[in-house]
Image (tube, rainbow, N blue to C red; front, side, top):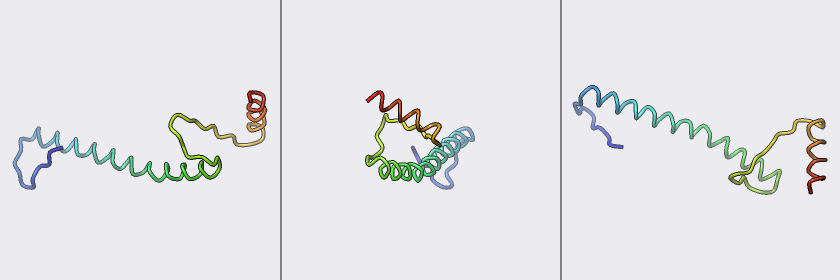
Length: 80
């Protein structure tokens, strides 16, 4: 992206487009920075519990209690 020097005179439409683009870029950057700590925490949790790092394409289903866990275990054992 081209940077505009301080004090440079530009047509209003160009100035507005530049500022909108910069705002969008900064918003995406902030979003990525907020997601990074969560990604790092998830990586740490899953590698410790599963003994393996996160991999693209895998999925996780959070089972909260015995009523959710037992049927999933039984199904996994049957399918093994």
